[in-house]
Image (cartoon, rainbow, N blue to C red; front, side, top):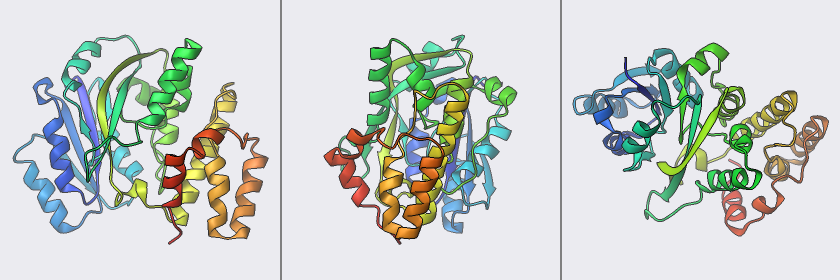
Length: 296
């Protein structure tokens, strides 16, 4: 059995998937699982061609969500540790060293630092900021609770597969933020967690990716996922930690006043603090990226 299972959802990005596959530390003999969700026939042929270069398992589904693809990957995985990667991202050169360093850890989850770059220019991008803020908060609080409760992405961490199986933790099969509840649950329900601040993984910012393009269905999916995570945290006596809903509240008005009123009512009824994340939402960089998301 492989020590590591790497699960990769894929949709119409075979060229970038090739870069990710090259970055995987193959000397560790990981079990690599690529799950294609509704790509074009041309893209699927290219992914199958990549199998002749890299020894990965390949599966096809037609469910149109990354959460569904990740869940299929979970069903197929056998490794002691789970790692997740998006098809347009890649592992950093230190990945092999870091995985070997922590493969015998007793923790259920090991968090790592991450980097972020723009696809077109290769320059440093903003997607690593959330993890950097959480690590800084952990230092300040002298506790890893902030990472447990607020790290909403599955990448940049090692997750013990037995935790996921025993707690029956799966991804939500929704248009956006399918990974938020999964990621928070593995952190909160882990018996113990560890942190290594060395960067394991690079998150690539691509303006044509699903993360960068938001229609109303995806916008609402993301907002409601945040509300569910916050409710889960309150249920586990972690109400001091909350995902910001301010962007959900402010952005809702772009889709009409009736929808905006529904969102405000929903957030207030659930007991969320609307001011959490105020400074981050109105940072010039973050505000610019929020303006780029236009109704379709």
